[in-house]
Structure formats: structure tokens, C-alpha cells
Image (cartoon, rainbow, N blue to C red):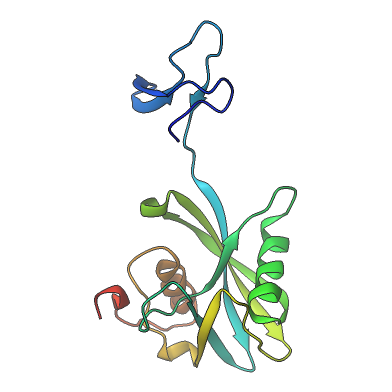
Length: 170
């Protein structure tokens, strides 16, 4: 954020609460502080017909496949948000099996809320996705960031301890 959303002045950096923050320079009249809090994102380990679905976003390299994710929308519960995302991105009807956990993704300033979702229907990819893979739970190699840690925790609950694989380097 470069400009104050309240008065339009260019923001400046200052220390507040021990961190660099963007401030409106007009503290007496405006006083805006951009806290830059993490953005909530929902993710799903989608189980469909006994397989786990990993998808490739249109903006990603050909070797990158990951979980279904999306931004939590205003007024939505995390569980409702991920069911909506599974429907929008894969055209599948989903049911929450369990909350897998919460995961930080510092590079994108996100907090990822991950669920295991059992889905039914016929897969039809949205325009955001260009491909998908079906893998057995034991075939997935978790990756060392974001949703990959969720996959690792989910697998561990099932007695699966695969080595991490950094698909971003392949």
C-alpha cells in the first residue's frame, strides 16, 4: 500500500509496536495505520473417489501442482469458504471431513486454514486451473511451504511419512 485510503496522502514508514508500519503522515487529522495483517486463505485436501486431487493454476509452471485454495470472503465461515472454492474450481460438491490445521505462508502474508474435504461429482476445471492429478494419499510428496505442511500433517495422521519434495525447484 502506497497511499492512505482515507485521505490520499503518500504513506510513510515508522516503527510502531516494534515493527515497521505504513502511516499516514497527517497523524493529527487522519491517523491511518496500515497494519498489513495476514490474509485468511482456505485450502482443501480434496478426496475424490479414493484419490487426492492436486491442481495446477494457469499462472504456474508445468511441474507445480498443489491443493485447492482460495481467499475467504466477507461473511463466510472458513468451512463454507472451502466448500465454495471446491465447487468453483473443480465443480465438485464437498463435505468437510476434518480441520487439518492452520499454516503460515509468510511469503504471501497469508494464514492458510486447511480442511480435508470429501467430494463427489464430475471434475470440471475452472478457468483458473489448467490441469489436475489424481494421487493416492501415500503417493503425495509434501512440499516445504504453505499447503505442503498441511499435506505432511494430514499424511502423518494416517501413518504416511513421505520425504519433503520442493516442486518449485524441479
